[in-house]
Length: 404
Image (cartoon, rainbow, N blue to C red; front, side, top):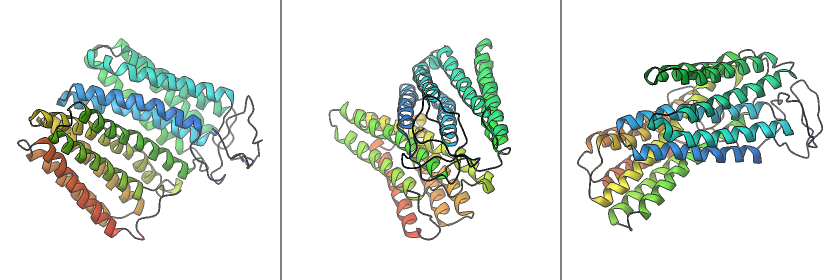
């Protein structure tokens, strides 16, 4: 990845390397105190490919707004999220911007595009493209870690464990194609278990902090913006298709308000304070907990789009459609409540407010079977606004500032 041109990068072993870009450079662990680092152009390009993957999952859920469709959305969101997260953490630790690294990441982007294209196939009973793409992504990442292990001193065991875990997970994904459809889901679950456990095993072997926590917080914030983009797309697409029907416009305004509340609360409170080596349990809650932030926001966006469409048609939302809006909102609120708890290391008023908003949102969607969709969206928005107001009043020393 790109580094500041004015500074000479320092490796974890204390060695310096030229700031000028070269055709080939060994991947060395980035020193924790190397200095401020922002997302590189390659990382941003990488994120752009995941826009297609998240959009494909949202589109699949929109066209199958049933409980089965919601379960499939959640099940497929996990590997998509994990692919983004795994490459993001690797890029943060091994800050190399040589030709081999760029080619590997560009190959990974192609894999993500293929993964997005394979989402409809899973729904139609032919997951070959999705599985092959995902297996290839994990094997490529394994290759990056194994390459890094050749040049490591302080983090060789870490890189080897990560590489072997990713290779095993990718192999199990590919092997799932040999298993009949009902049992294939079990194999996918086993593959994801291997991949999810790998960082827990690997990080314990690393003697030094290899991650820039401020950079990690920035990267997660950027992915939050990707899923918030789905909310904006849902509002725009749903409204334009209804000819500015008043009910649709009201639902769209409420949906945008929900997205604004999510942005306001997330970027006003989520910090990297829990991402410390001496607080590994808290760090994993922070990192893994974001799955429910991302998936929740994306699912709620689909719920808003359906509310716009049903509102324009004078219909009500079905149980599964209300579940998308309610479960998505609740997922986000519970996740940021857990992240807050591990960040400040106690149960505070902010955690209570977030849990209260989750209960209120769930109750609104549970009892709103006969409510007009625009009213349902506005009531969920009202619950979030009350929660955001309470949180703003409680903001103080227990709310650390987010790093620039």
